[in-house]
Length: 458
Ligand code: MV4
Image (cartoon, rainbow, N blue to C red; front, side, top):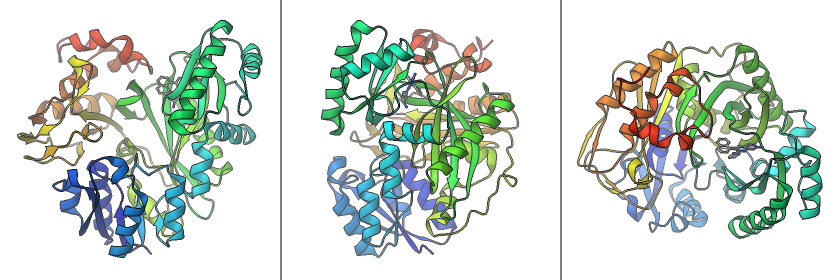
């Protein structure tokens, strides 16, 4: 059993993990950079260790410093949260070599799924639908041309080591292919140290639907339904919801089965996410698997009543999943709005500064995940996400009205935020009708920014 967890992260996710540990009677160790001395996670943890200077590479990405902090405090497990070292196979390996349990999948699993071409190959073998494309990696321009010819244009070139939108190129016709292949590959080589590429048919304006899964050390795998993450801007999710307003009960069943098949095929352990894209005709395709807890995990928690962080801790301590397919009941509808320190009217330019005034909403159906408090100084060094507002209602309509009400109560002064932008997005006809895809925000940015609140909703 795990007795003390070091949280190798910061911000709201560090706070979220500390809270789960406290409820389970597990001691907590926060780590922090010198920019985070006053951060909430440092105040809430039982112990805190400074691991370096503000730049992530000198602190939250500094493996030796984090392991030293764990050894020094006698932590027997490390929770990596998301981002930073959460999908770093080397880190997972080193933790376990030091007899510190990494709360997540094995290094081999992280490595396999981190290689997107390999993941795709494994899914093909497991009979999980993937986008038509190359079997594995594409070695050169000649092979790229041949493959594109077979699947037909437009195609998408993707870096095996990429993911989350990095190292991708859309290619509309053969004349563009050579240049795109060479530039994407060299970009990937310098960004990830791996220039290998694969190819898929380009699916235009897809929905992004992901399934939450949990697997234990005994080969049991369950899914906890889907999240619709189609509302994004530049590969940053803006609003997520569960269940998806787009997919039918039949599609949900088939996608859920495919997600379980995917996780079982790789013998997955701990929490993970199977990402699919879904085209306008309802065809779905595996694109990536994320081997971490995700930012948007609370919406799944709201509709299932499952505490995913506690499940991660139980799985990591070798317990059998107590949840079964039959025991998981889906209820109601949850929406998450990410609140960022940014100015939507200045190309979403991020900002830093002191929170001079703060009022967090509450009441029925409202959940807030944040590391903010009044007087806290938001450093300029890290991600701009300040808080997540999660609304839960019996129906999608109720969840939306609870979210609108909650955003109206939320006050964050001293920084630019996207609170009003979220309000405007929530009030678009497309959102109200559940009729949007992954390029909706970029295509309609001006209209969204002009959208009033409440009045033009329908
Ligand atoms: C695609 C695609 C269309 N066709 N693959 C972007 C991030 C990475 N996870 C995969 N992505 C995409 N892959 C094919 N074959 C469109 C996207 C895509 C996207 C996917 C999910 C969520 C938002 C997106 C925004 C733009 C492009």
